[in-house]
Length: 629
View (spheres, rainbow, N blue to C red):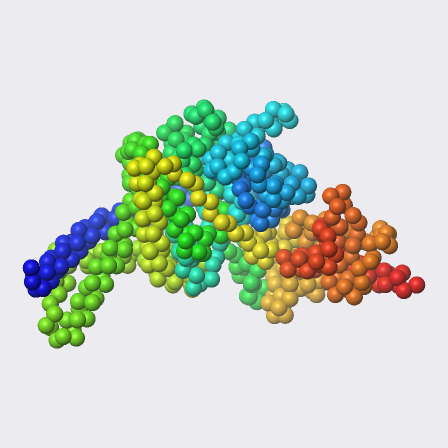
């Protein structure tokens, strides 16, 4: 076969491949368009026909329900670097009191156990549960150990938990989360809250593509799925279950409610619940919060508020290898393991939901093949232009043919897809991230292709060799103190709730804060709207620290630290605590860097308390006078 014949065969193959890929992309594109239309139609219907007759759920509605006991389940394997901060942040954040956090640990992970025990000394509602089996096993096995530990705890303490909540060691919880679960359980057997990826830098394409995907999926796809299909996939975090649901699942298998044979035990859990006929719901609940960055227009009648979404936030991988390995595990469980176990069970609505879940293995590869075809055409057109028409290119890129028509339709569907992705990203993260969602979608397709290839290879190797599918742990990160601050309750809102300031006083202080660039507390003091004592007692509550008034005499042995160090850091040793740590008072913001620096100065574990600046100054002066006399 000559070169001309080979080239003709190549063009014919390229044309055929283009037609096949165009048809498949058309099918998936129309499927996505259908979800878009339903989402917009549902939103319009609810606005004009539901909310016009029935009031929206409010924060007050949540507060009026008596608190039911809730058990929070957190599996942990080699999470020593983050688990203590996660637990302390959760306990300091929840606007709820009747809960316990059960942390599943392994006997061969003493570092994580040490961190959990340290957090438990500060927050007694934290209960470590150490399983019998050395790790790592998998998340389902650890969750089953936690569930068994909860049953043992309930029997020993003669108590019963009415709801169970799942979280991971890297989760940033919302203050109203447990109140929302408390409101809907046991009327609903399973509740899933939105999962929001914590913000990454604009040019971080790997971490950023998670932001884009979760913004759209948890604002549109899951809403439509719950309304149209009657099923909600469990994300494994930010999900709550009634006691009835947990008991029903525990009865389905001998080793506990979670399927240890699945790499995506959360997805399997929700699928089985649906098959058992238990109710599921996906809830997007937003509350209005006063925006701290108010302009001077806020001093008039005009007020500015932002919507605060009740959901779970966390960092997703920003490393390519970690990202495609994590997604490969998801695909293995959702596509291959679930298909092998459950095939296409259920009514047409469930079958459609399964198609939506499983088509990802196809679309990930279609995107890369489409990029390959586009690259071929680009090269051919370029050569055609350079060689002045000597190099021919396939006629399908000229108008008139059926493939050309498909390409135009697919181009419109792609534009629609990109527009929706950018819009959902913009709604959460702002304009810069919204604009970057389009190029990040291309990079996301590359990661999804790597993930689907890995998932397919691992599944085929499992089927051919009988080698069990191994659980691959994802390395986790947790936000710093500064990064957590936007998700904690606003100081101004807390002071208003306590009746210490008015709405107008807050607006004036925020204006002062904007002009001078000072913290809100200092602006309130400068305006004379609050005294030191009320401000710092509220700050202590906000950050879940003890407050000391520094009136009790201190043992002189605690003043061995040089005075210049105490004045530089504005800290005062108070007393030794039962756990061996030293309680230190300060009036400064407790950033991670500040804690580390002061910890190195004292060469011992520290616990923290807040005191007013005037009391800190008074005690420092007294201490210096006592030492000099």
